[in-house]
Length: 104
Image: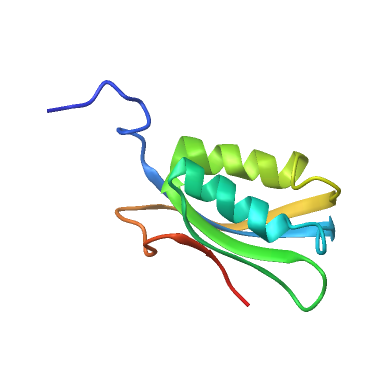
């Protein structure tokens, strides 16, 4: 039976991201993980050696779009986002990850 919930019928999206600016040392990875988990997005996030934040997220496209907006304009308290790059946008059949985690 088809659901009336637009999110339930939304295509699944996958995208890799890198956030540039003053984004380390302000719990950016923790906020990203918690927000993705609350939206049902799976994937991972980590600090890079160059001072940016790297990650990959997979989930219903409206929620991935919402997170992309957050990663570009909001971020964690105290951070200063310069810009965010998104690569490898694709539509997927099912997520490759079971949860959203922080990698080290």
